[in-house]
Image (cartoon, rainbow, N blue to C red; front, side):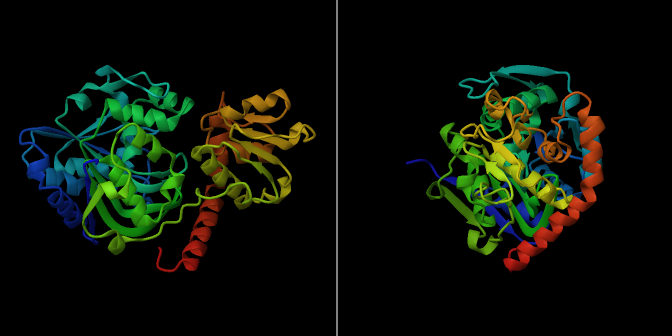
Length: 429
């Protein structure tokens, strides 16, 4: 029988109290952090968004962890991150409030993207296209790596927690490589090369809705802690009502031996799941084939990433008043579909690398490359009747201006949908 994984769960409005309780439940900070050690904290600071948006790990959670770790008398504390592709890590630190906390608490900030002292680590038994990964020497030589994710719905993964947050230890080149084949497998391969020994999850204000780029924060008032990244993510799903069978990476994580997924092999200490339960609205889960009956949606064999992007883009068409105008289009995601030959090519949008094969019978269909594709590519392709995929100058000349143009109306649409969802599910916000 597998050894049980301990997950500490603390609920309350006090951030420091929750963090301290979690460390105490894990045996006390002196038990998990060695005296005189170098400790790296890896928050989620991937986008330049302020704390109230719940896009990044809350700076007060970062501060609380720093103060707790200081009790163990470490030699050095470093906060490290590599922001999302195309984002400036230092700007993300500043806007998220983490930079100010680092200055006030007198700890170091490191931008992994700018680091030149990298070590090429072999990924043994790799499962994706990542057979080696370049990682910063300071990260590999640190005595402790504390993973500090924020709990949120996520377009690429349905849900984001401890497992996904370690993706932010690589530079843009590897990050791009991870998206080109199988992001789930690539995440596990990075974990095998760079494993956090402690995971502290910020679930004070979890991000529901169309997160990470249009999240709807809810007051969950929790902090979770565990040495097992799979177990902490599973418990995070349990306390927010997320159907874990819809999260692809749990199965892969269990197969790779990263941790315990089954609840019978997880011991929850502190507050109970029942005491903490608060249902999150995650619109990325469910049957996508019948959700937009005005369109011919074909999604056999689609991964959770493309299903989530389908949900975002179809709803964004509604938000910008382009949904009805383009009714009747055939939208294809996944590699197990059949497309009748009599459907005109100009009515077909093929979304993702695995749909390229359908060009054989429909050579003039709109094919959007990517694994997964650029986030707004689908709705912009349908709207503009030209392939929008972010290649060439499209990112600067079309995608970003269109996203900026539509941001306000999309935000209003999402928050109105959230209000409707939570009014129909009272007690869940």
